[in-house]
Image (cartoon, rainbow over all chains, first blue to last red; front, side, top):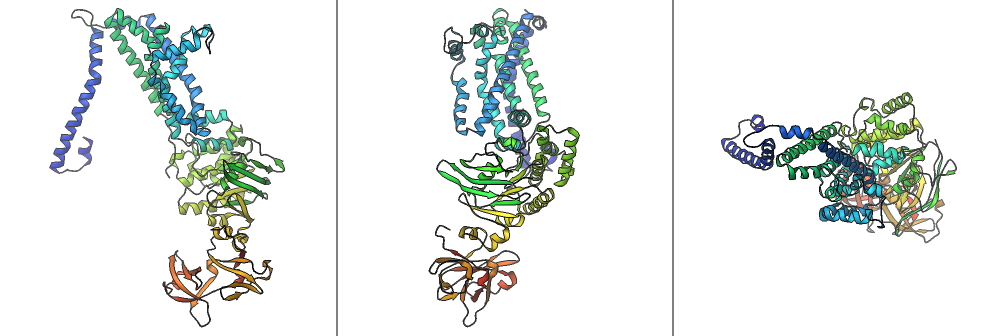
Length: 281
Length: 352
């Protein structure tokens, strides 16, 4: 459409070819949109179904009024926040120091970061339990910690690693961290100041990306919580699904909505005041 | 302002010996250039002074105190890097203020200092621009202001001009010299460009394979290069091989007068270095030293004419371009030079 306005009178042949291409790409977009949207639409209709030919919002009102749902959601959000915090504290300095001091370790970290793709969560949670929470295990942690849902954060950090590591690594490769840290050092900054004023502000977009993905992963994570018997949001969805089919559909859409609002909020916050590295030459 | 002394600094990276017994003493307020080809150790030496690298042995002394083990963020040295190094998340003024902020300089004094420095580098109007909105030359100016803001004991410039295009390079080079003289800050400037080094420095240290071959004023370096390497690197392109005899230097079949104080024993193999502007070419006359024009290189106002001598040596002469017009390749010319302005050095087999 825009093309037709900006380009003055294309030859009829080109115009024909173009409209053909437009039609094809339009159709293609329609197919893709249908692929993603039809299941959502189906879920929406099913979630509104109240038996027979009745449709209403009762599933949603029940949902919003359920304290169990809010407790599960809050637990998952809390775990996501802890996961993000622990990931950032561990990973930002690690990625930075590997770039500055130990570039030969980069391939190692890269391989480690994709491990969660290879190791199924079920194996991961068993390993985690065996290593940390069996009494007398090599790295046994105190029982008060192991028995709390926060214990799962250790596993979530690993689960999110493929996404968080990549986001930070890409963010850092857009910066000349070597020169920037040396410049800050020569100006008298200590490492705390370098992190707070130079590295983190310039990794803002990368950190936001990593945060988003971590939230999405933790909110949807089922295996860990189900095996360790914690009632997170994903476990609650599954439970509702078994006792109330239409209620589960409503809950799925609700969680979809929560995730999207969160993502859009982060994106809006992130793109404002976004910084670009480098110069105009 | 400070007095810096470098004592016998050595540095190796694995088997590679980057600095060998490098020693230099800097006077207060002077601009010293470390000049040499890439890989000669000049940047490593600068980074050792800044504390970004540590020497294997030797010492860096500032005002008589050994600072070799001091952390870089405690040395109070301003540094400008070859790569653009402004913090992309801060405006030009915030970049300049950074060093003062980490020092907790009081707000009003900090703002005044930032304003002064932005004016000093001629970017008062660009205070609120982000680095990506500035040209390369402007970014390096801001980097210079940022380095000066902390009132450094030393200003370290690590090839700050090499990423810039030729015109901006010359302009900023002159400006660096002006600002250095205005502020009186002791400055160490690293470059591989001999023209840059000769034009801005009080003294130049020419480095070769981790050693300091010569440390002297630009004039002395140009007129009396201490080694074959310095002579070559500084752009003295003509070399003639001969040996020392009674009363002068034997070159082929002729004996050329040599300055009496050359201090070399008879029979020493020597190389005579001639600057291209000291070589004269004239129409061939009876008894003159014969040469054949081999090629011309047009350089604008001047043209460099390469002339082959009968012995096979090649000699270069810079002539005003109109004069060079008649000297087409193949022309026979008389070649002459003033032996007083030639440099005679014992032959260095290692020099390229």
